[in-house]
Amino acid sequence: MCEQAYTLLVPLNKEGENELLGTGGDADLPNCQEFDLTEKESWLLDPLFDSYNAMFGIIIDYYEEEFILAKDIPQALTMAKTTLKRSTDETEQRGLNTLISALQMAENHDTCMEIVG
Image 1 (cartoon, one colour):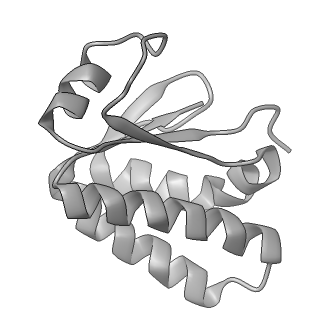
Image 2: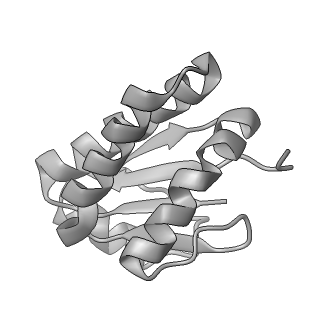
């Protein structure tokens, strides 16, 4: 099992994107919404994140901060919803619902989503 949990950050507007892209993760982000996954949820979502890595050419891991760009949010959302339909694990479903909420917010605001390990 992983030793860390992921945090998902979604800018609520273009100012939020600028805040997120201009920080090293330590600044106040008033125009961003934070979604937290537990350690177990993060571990259970690793296979989906591996699929995101392959699909979007990114590297989601516990030592990097990675972005799913606005143009890729719809595909990421579809993949998460498909995974949720197949899931039989309650903890995984909870994590997927958190991820889906974050992705839907990003889609609604036409912004990206940052995944921080």
